[in-house]
Length: 287
Image 1 (cartoon, rainbow, N blue to C red):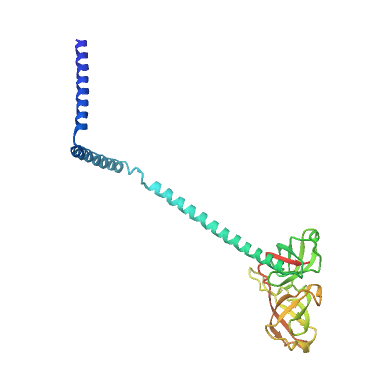
Image 2: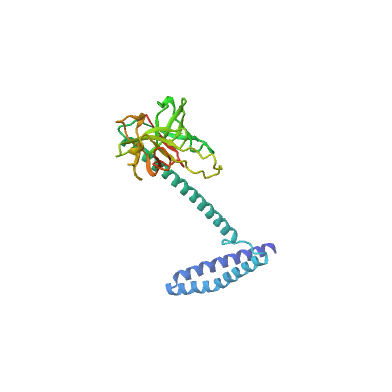
């Protein structure tokens, strides 16, 4: 009995194989148009089942509380977070690039000034220290000293004009007394007027309460000859020369903003300085 069932199973398998081969041969022998129609009928039978399967999947996700699929909210949140991080990184790089471009511009200006100034030998310095309070406009410390040929009494300038004078020197640092300091004084001339005077700083106002925004002290010129000072007009340029030399290179200190004749003594010239004393990063020592 077992052998008979086995023979029947083997015969059935061979019959199915025979019909499968026969059906394949028939499909190969069919004209192309008929083959396309049969394939279309197959898709028509299959697609409703696929649509039904997709509908069942959506129902299942709803029943289980909305499981995420390939386009779920979690993926969208991750993409949004990555986009926000990329935007923040871009903004940081943009600001850093702008800072580097500004520093590059400043250095190019200073290099250009060094090359153009054939009458002077200049030492480029970086400001390392500045008093944050009452002496903010009195002095700065730069990163050059006697090792670099810096000596007391040397003028210090920016790319705009006079800044101050070297007052103390260490091996690798130097203290610069600013032209706005009450301790600063230096001989000066009024261009085109044949007038000389003493350039002095007004110093910090002791009556002024210290705050984040301190007023810039006045820079004034005290006359040596009151009669000649009467000839000076607003807008005239005040200059200095290194070590007071009459034929040395001319450095601009500022322009006359006001001629004060209110005192009993000779007039006093109030200046708008050529250099800005609020923000200073790089300076030159005139060697």
